[in-house]
Amino acid sequence: MKEDVFYGKGMAHVKKDYPDIFEAVVTLNEAAYTGKVLDYRIQKLIALGITAAASDDRAMKKQMMSAMREFDISRDEIVDVLRVVLLTSGNPPFTKAMKILYDITE
Image (cartoon, helix red, strand yellow):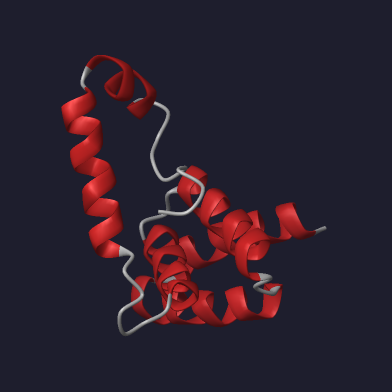
């Protein structure tokens, strides 16, 4: 888990009131992002593609920003991921993701 920021706003309440559930989410996150075969940078790009394919605006923006901040991932690298989103998920998620990318990089 990088920087302990991997969840939506609602998880703040869970962390406070239901620490057992929060710890389970933390453990799951740590199990997913192991870097055993694919390093965390590649896993971050995969996560970015999944959030883009799902058309999740908020998650896309967070994934893009953290990818650029944590790994110095370039706009062109993100566009390569979004090319796959275009192929597999279609034009609406692709264009939404491109808008978000340009909003945060210009």
